[in-house]
Every structure is written in C-alpha cells, then in structure tokens.
Length: 531
Image 1 (spheres, one colour):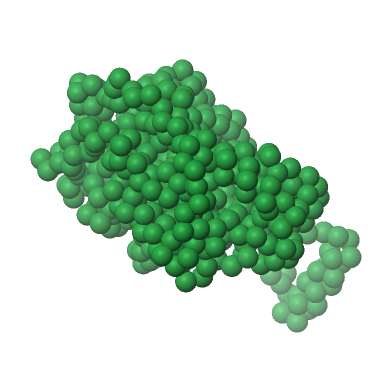
Image 2 (tube, one colour):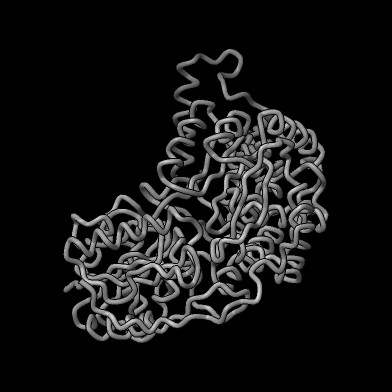
C-alpha cells in the first residue's frame, strides 16, 4: 500500500561532481598506497556514474613490504615521548579544518552523500585529534598501583604499544572511520596499516597525505588497497591488533582469524537502532531531529535509526509532522550545502533497500512517504521512506536495512516501548525523546544499546569522545573513544618491587606460622580499610 504525496525537492544540477579530483590529483593520491600490482579496480562516482579512478591493488609482496616498513618505523616512533607523538595530531586538527573544502568534495564524490553529512566526518576527525592530543599522555603514563603488602611492595602499571595495528575501514564514513581509529593507535606508539574500501580509498589517502604534512614520519602509517576477501586474511596474519568496522558477518570471521593467532580485535558492526518518542516528548523537536537520525548519509550509517516507537498519546501528531518533513526533503548530488540527502553508494545498496521496501509493501505495510528509486537524479538515488504496519514476517522488521528506510510503530506504554526496542540481536545505538530528563535516563538504562541519546539521534553520544563508544550483542565488541579507545592499542605490564622482607616465611619460620601470620595481617588490612 502507498499513502503519500510526493513533494520531495531536487537540488539544482551541479556543474561538476569531481572538482577536487582532476586526473593529476587522483594520480598523486594513488601513488601514496603500497600497491605496485598492475591489476586495478575502477571506481565510479555513485551520484553521477562518472569514473573517479583506476586504483592499483596490493598483492602479498606489497603487504609484506608495508609491514616491514611499518615495523621498522614503529621502533623509532615508539621511543619518542607521547607528547611529541600527540603534537602531530594537534597540528592535524588544524589542517583538517583549514583544508576541509577539498576533502568534502572527495567525500561527496566517492560516497554520494550530502555535503552536510560529509562535514560530520571532518568534525569527527577534528574532535578526536583534539581529544587524544590533549589526553593521551595522561592515559598512557605509568601508574602506581597498590602492592601486595603495604610499605613492603610497590607496583606500577606500564603501557607498551602493540606493534602494528591493522585498521580495516568501510566506505560509508571513510574519513571518520579510517583516521579516528588510526590516530589513537599511532599516538600510543604503534604503526598502522590501513585497508580502506576501494570505493573510498582516495579519502584515506588524502588523510595520509595531510598527516605527513602535520609531521607524521614516513612509513609509520601504511595504506594498502584491495578487496577484503582478497587481502584481508593476509593482513590479519601479520597484525598485532585488528580494528574493523563493517558487517556483523565479516566481523565474526575477523574475530575468528584474530583469535586463532591470539591477537586482539575491536569490532563495530551492524545496528537496527530504535528511537523512542515518549508521551511527554516535544513532538516538533522529535520529528525534526528524526530526519537527521534516520537519513544522514542516506541511512548508510551504523548509528542511524531504523525503528521509531511512538507512544499513542503523541503518535498522530508525530507522524503528521515527521512525514511532512520527509516529503519536504531536498535530494541532490551537488558539491554545496543545499541538499538534505544524497545518493546511495552502491547498486547492491539500492537492490537491498528496494527489496526490503517491496517485501514490506507486498505483505501489507503502508508506505507513508518515499518508497521508490529516483534514477532521474542519479544511478543510486532512493527516496527517504517511511513505513507503517511492518510486521515480523517482513525483512524490514529485524534485518538491518542500511538505507533511508524507517518503520514507525504505535506503542501504548513505556514498558512496551522498551520491550520492543530491545527485541533485536543488535545493540549499537538508541534515542529517547522526553521532556523529563530523569525519566529518559531511567529508560536509557533499561535499553540494550552501547549508546543512548536523550533528545538527540546519535550525535550527542558519538561526539562525546571522552566516553567509550561501541555495541552490545551482534553490534560488536571493544570500544572506540575515551581512554578505552587508546588503551586497547597497548599491552599492559606490571612491574612490582619487594622491599625488606620476602613474601614468604622468614628464616627459621615454619610454613604454618607463616600462614597464621599472613592470615592475621589480611584480617587487619581489611579492618583498616586497606586495599
């Protein structure tokens, strides 16, 4: 069923979609990759179908070379003071903001997203650069710990870099997820080998160039190119730690491969994120914010909302306002801040999203807005789509759509909203709308999600980089951001010193007497409140 009046606006046709990607610029960026293989992959601008680049692909010899150079550079890099390493990323912060126009053009060209959504990635990198440049020294410094016996034993915690960290980043947020994961690993004293998606490789290579301008030593950050199924295992076989963002299925495979080598990994995976609009919510604010929460980067965002649970008292008012907002969105691919949503990135995304919507439609769901591809705008445009009446037998009910499609559900109680929100194998992000912050905090603690935003879609939690970010369940393991986001790239060592007396019977003391003496000491320490 369809119930919509299509008023979606179209942004003016751009004069060009690749102003930052002249052939000589593409060639300069491509040469930065460790990829001497004659074989190449052609990338195409999703919004226009125009060729972007022929990318060389890395073979096993290239990967060996990248790791050899990274390990050699890492030994010297790790000897530098933390503050000296961190200062590079303070300078990178300034450069990213100063030179943002070029990377915004590259991001839009490679992904098809709207400029406002590309700018989110610039902000993300700047925030993370600033945060870790300021806090890394404190997080990584050696720390005194309570010893086994007061006064007699001292202990210190010392952090060492892992060695070479592999960062496998996706195509949907290629600047944020390549740089903001690599930078704490580098500040911690590691080398990094990055494998960006081919589609968005130029974005990572641009960041690589800018980092060297900021003072990052040559060879400490390597970039290799290739499809995951071709070179992924080769990378993991050489890594000292693996950082991956992408699908849950691939994340499981990476976890198994890392575990077989007893190396750690951090995985941010899929999501089927819920937004709860409670009966005391400001409906207008919630409906306006839901546009950003659901349709940023055309919904190709692990943090985006795909399920809206609206309490009965505000359901009709919310749906009316939200659908009107959706129908008023402007679609376009121009390199300017005049589109509300851009294109999908791949034909497979268009096929998957169309399949979810048509499956729901066939099985009785109602399309309140959108629900169709827009080839008149570009190869992979799809309208922002709002569904109701989505039920458990429909693909859109449980499967991650990863596109501009959201389902609205009417609920009657707070408990029902929480129960429905938690009815998923994922647990990445959630959003709650209420005028009562204490109520929102209470509800948030009952949700199975790694991040919960109150009166915001995703930006509040994601941008609070002093707090850890990650998922529950099939949304992954490990955390980025905060102290955990840099300490995961280190091995921790305990150095303990025993003074004066051994932790053993004194000369001439029997084991039994020693046991009684130590028992008495432990009882005394507990009563004195000693750790």
